[in-house]
Length: 314
Image 1 (cartoon, one colour):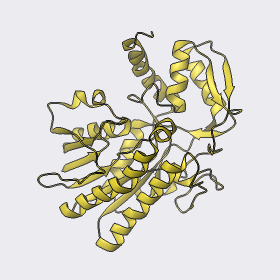
Image 2: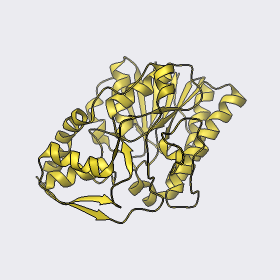
Image 3: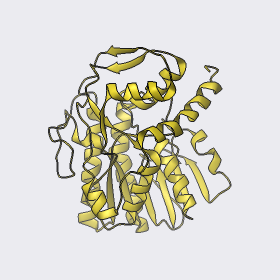
Image 4: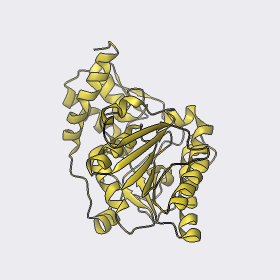
């Protein structure tokens, strides 16, 4: 297949590009490098891989046939979408529209990378795909939440109105190599602080829960989704739930760091719980995560050690 990946130089996008290449496909990566980096895809040079530095909110043209489009372009961490609110809204709306237009012109399959954030601060636990969410549209996180909710609505409109063959994956917390040190999310923050011997910063009292899926598992679920016939959203994530405080203690145990844990103010509209119900993914895709948290963290730490050494911090 000849496949376009928007946001392909980002954390998830780069792992997706690598998996698609390993599966024998040709990959065209589009990314304006707002939050992505060519460092994430440099090792893919020399393969059936093309990188184009491009903002997908503009007119989108790709020469030749295209069999599938994965729309992954978007800031994805709170620190990024609060810094780039307009760009986040534009790529979720205009970018999705342009990518869908390309899919329609090429008669290609289209897969949207949506997010568990469409559920907001959920009143249903665990979150199932038929839950409509509890989102504050005008809060600081609303730029991301509503961009993704609009993107889902637009994808379904193209599916119903134009018969486009579409997929929607709702991605839950994912971690692994190639996350940015200053990403702002809990995994890179805690690992970096532990490696540097700094205090572990827990927001609030740490009782809020999260579930963590290793990137390799997530990408496998997404590829399976593309090859399925499921047009409505599917949760992909790890249903094993823990508190943020438990996660901080896990990082300290694995790294052997002797850091103290400090508490900081809880961000506005920070979800109290987050755990996917993956029944649909199990039944439709035959998918569930395989990599235990401890193994995944041990496979992630060397990347952060390498990054910190390159910055002269280790």
